[in-house]
Image (cartoon, rainbow, N blue to C red):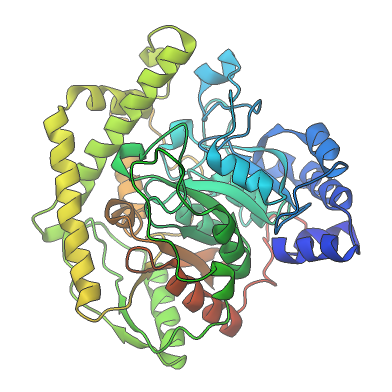
Amino acid sequence: MSDTELTRLDATAQAELVATGEASPSELVEAAIGRADAVNPQINAIIHPLYDEAREKASGDLPDGPFRGVPFLFKDLGAVLAGHPLHTGSRVLKEFGLTAPFDSALGRRFADAGLVTIGKTNTPEWGILPTTEPVAYGATRNPWDLDRSPGGSSGGSAAAVAAGIVPVAHANDGGGSIRIPAGSNGLVGLKPSRARVSLAPYAGDTMSGLAVEFAVTRSVRDTARLLEWVQGSEPGDPYAAIPPARPYSEEPGSDPGNLKIALLTESLTGDGIDPEVAEAARRSAADLEALGHEILEPDLSVADGPIDLYQTFITRWAAGVAETAATIEVVIGRKLTADDVEPLTWKLVERGRRESGADYLFAVTQHQALSRMVAAMYEGGIDLIMTPTLADLPPPLGTYDDSGPDPMTAMDYARRIATFTGIFNATGQPAISLPLQQSAGGLPIGIQLAAPIWREDLLIRIASQLEQAHPWAGRRPAAITID
């Protein structure tokens, strides 16, 4: 099998080649490195190559996990392995040369699964924006259109998977940062339930549970198999998700039943939606009806309700940014200044420091009330909520420019494009983006499905049914050469 053929396979298929002796871990890793050498200069997804370390690990004794020998990438934010760079899109930490002092729980679980890390991927500064254009490392480009954003904050990981470098990569999500890059790059992106995947020992529940860790993949079966391996709490976690009823790897191909699915195509933050994106969601709704499911269109006027989803979200987000600033100050041994970070980052640091603990707790309380409102939809007979993943097509690079008089204008566009994703960080529900549609110009359009809390099993079943009925594995990014 040629290197090109190897890099087109999903992680499960690559692992099967290793298990049967048809390919070695070293062959898989060399194919991935060769692919990275060919395409990374075009897309700037990998910012820390770890090729020599990967070659050494692939030629040694690897753990006998489900993905033994499969090449992998870590996002440069969140889960880590000891000794790897940890710069979080930050110029300050890049100049400082920070490396991770010890493994995170998730980093160790990825390694125990047999995955071989070949590098780390680009991320916006501190993971703030749904694009990947940090000053520290420059912009990552979307493999489907090199002038467009790959999304964020896991844009480097998603671009690398879409470009065929690796079949799966680490990602995390505090407002859409798994699902938005998945939707922008034609991938599967599952945001697990709150506390499904441990953040230990570096964090307990980031921003009171807004952020979760996992991955972006090419196939539903990879998502299921990887989640099965890495899910579960660690000692000292502040709380845990209810364990699955059975292994997630048993869910693909299982009958989801005839479901009632609520279709939402109106912005939850009062912003506009690209008509092409909304129409794509309606096409997928029709596909679900053809599979025997019932589509409903309820009036969910969150934008007009008593809870200001955006402002309460920003209160929590700014607090998290201010906390990050305080942590970095401890690491580098001095106070940060506005010259150390990007304009939007500093604006959020200032807001996070200015608002009170009461402001923060009020925002959390508002989101808990919102969680009960959304849970009532499910209790009332809805099985899933369906939306476009993004409110727009992947925007041109530079759209999130924060260099003007008010850096928060970048966040205003983020509010618009992430209108359907941030709500499920606030509620803690699992949600998945699937590459079901494409624009008239050939750009990926992700479709999001959200399940009740802890029901990743249901999402995997319906995602697998859609993948079988409307397969996406044969689609290739138009802006780079695969062969």
